[in-house]
Length: 258
Image (cartoon, rainbow, N blue to C red):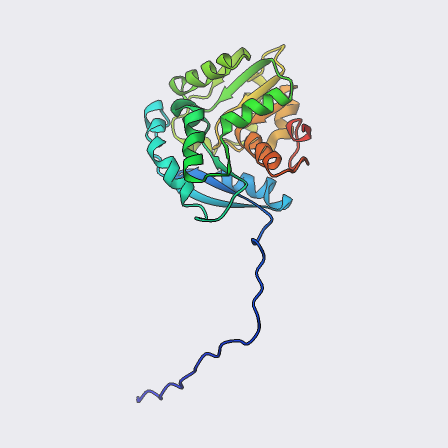
């Protein structure tokens, strides 16, 4: 069968002027997520997008298991990952979404690496956000819950102690794969929070951005009987404050705190 000749269509340049907004959204952040992360983007979409904050994400290589050695291996890639997010465009903040790596690499070093890749944006980590959140809540005595093995949990406990918090109880679930951490269900996490919170603690901090704790923060606070700060809840709170938003984007005591 003979093909019919194709008509030649010549595009016409529109005579109308094109006007541009300064940027598509008034507030926007960058997110450096682990290649295995299943949780942070979902949490941020729920807490930040409805507040008019756009989240622009990139990924950083990570290989399980979650150990100090594998976490430290991410350090050389942080600056390049931050620089990949909207090059030559301004951002209000850039979040590096890994609590345990921020501890192992060093929180100041992680934030410096973010700033090197994206100058001018507030550099936020789950650790810096959690410390600010706990202090804003007036916490002095703290219970700590992690999904990690003991080897990965110990440096985090040491960091909070060095920052002046009295650790009443430190509990770890013994998981070594962050993909399994992302699958911990609500009932398990509620019971973990209940048993991990020591009498007399002012708050419970739940580490790890893989855990879906931010989605169930009201249930966790009911079980713990004290304010509960999770890694993703703290980073979302810090992002909101960096963007000048003092509203409550989720349930829980923290989101009601300026």
